[in-house]
Amino acid sequence: MDVEIMTIGDELLYGQVVDTNSAFMGQQLGRLGLRVRQITSVSDRADEIVAALDQARQRVQVILMTGGLGPTKDDLTKHVLARYFGRELVLHEPTLHHVEEIFRRFGRPMLDVNRQQAMVPAGTEVLHNAVGTAPGMWMEDAGTVFISMPGVPFEMKRLMTDEVLPKLQAKFQLAPIEHVVIMTAGLGESFLAEKIKDWESALPPNVKLAYLPSLGSVRLRLTGTADG
Image 1 (tube, rainbow, N blue to C red):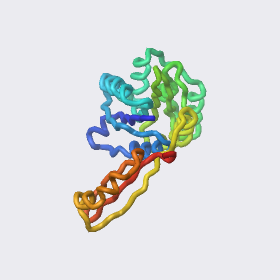
Image 2 (cartoon, one colour; image 1 turned 60 degrees about the vertical axis):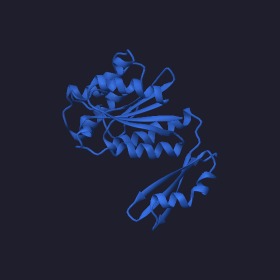
Image 3 (cartoon, rainbow, N blue to C red; image 1 turned 45 degrees about the vertical axis):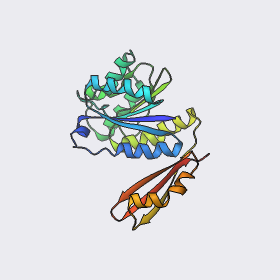
Image 4 (tube, helix red, strand yellow; image 1 turned 90 degrees about the vertical axis):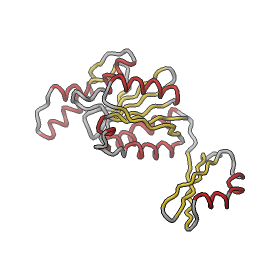
């Protein structure tokens, strides 16, 4: 099962924020047996998000998006998704109650833009965000699963752990992907490849070897599915 990770936000493209979300998601998805085929970063422009979605659904069965779910005008993701699927934004009452409780807890007034956090595209399966105001969203269309989560790392991680990963595991029959790393030192990458070429050629077809060079050493990473 193939996945594309899509991170949304100008701050990523400007280099103002380092994308740690993709690394975390890639690690967690691999443990389930989902293969990340591509990671895409997209600006806060509706047309570019739509184009990225059109391209991604041609490549993979699951699209995981982060970012663009905040309360400000540059947070476009759910509005784009609503138009993309031809759905209206509707109020999700449980999320509204959750947002209201957060503001009560901190003794702060709740603005209309905060209420808007509880608006989701009609027909969306809402994923509860226990540590924030923007819910996650799960949508399916023509055999593709679209998942949208906040870009705030600790919120995304909580949603992945509590909601997204269990749902993916329940929906698909998955074989976990395993990695074994062998450390070598004192040999350059090309010389090492020549030394082990016969061993590499004898690897089973479900095992992939990657060379990861660094100063003075080369790591060999073997990747394969657990059922292989």
